[in-house]
Image 1 (cartoon, rainbow, N blue to C red):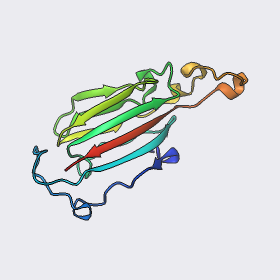
Image 2: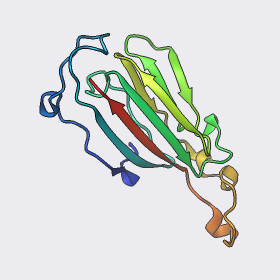
Image 3: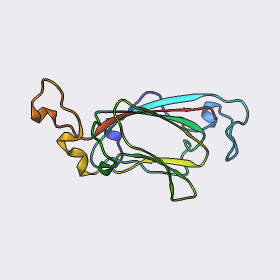
Image 4: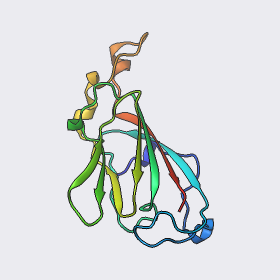
Length: 157
């Protein structure tokens, strides 16, 4: 059910902290010991049926800087889904929600225990007026499904 169909990995995610020489840190501590910076990115095509899950056993649930850049999403609404949500691992309340917005860069510093996930993209994301028309194309070619995002993650510990 995720956005794997259009995913392009720029740099593989680390399999384990030990494999990357990263010093393990205690929960809530984002500044312990020497670090080995890691950076990677992904390109996603979010379309109806796409989503991600929040899992608290993920190695990525550590201190990091998340980057989001959205494409082909003019007129996108949170009613269509596809918003990136941040929650605390021990609470149900949403801390932050990012709605896809064209030509906008979102940077989020994520602390230990903060989970992120992308909400389910529903059928409303298929509407033709969800994106602006492309010059030189017929109305049939103009109908796009969903939107695209580039996600980058930078972490030091």
